[in-house]
View 1: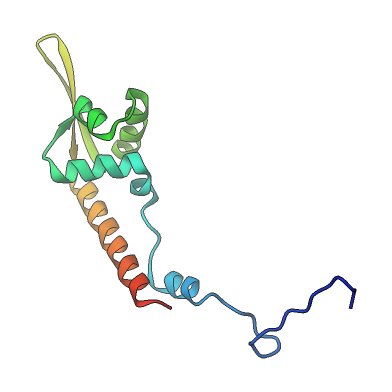
View 2: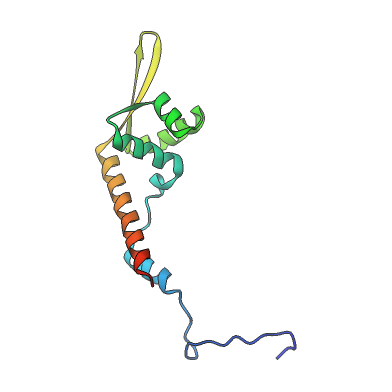
Amino acid sequence: MHPRATRTVSAHPAGEKARAPSAGRAAARLPDLDRLIHERIRLGIVSALAANEALSFAELKRLLETTDGNLSVHARKLEDADYIACSKRFEGRVPRTEFRLTRSGREAFERYLAHLDALVRWARRGP
């Protein structure tokens, strides 16, 4: 053995690799989070729409404290996935964009919340 080398002592029998018990248990029992919803702004959009029948672009922007461009990009991704529906109309000469959560968006959000709940319960039980 080289003078600077250190020896690792394992509590596991020869040939057996140590595994993190939490990683294997989580992977075996819990599905991946919905990455589309999991991003902060998109989670905010879906959460706000789950609590309200509809919200305007301006209301979401103010609520989430984000920029027009950022909200637009994230809303488009949710719309492309059919999680939200967007309607545009004019009130007088002022355009109004309004968003609503679709049925599939509500179902995806409920699955997401159930998954988070399962993760919390799993973490409280410990390895």
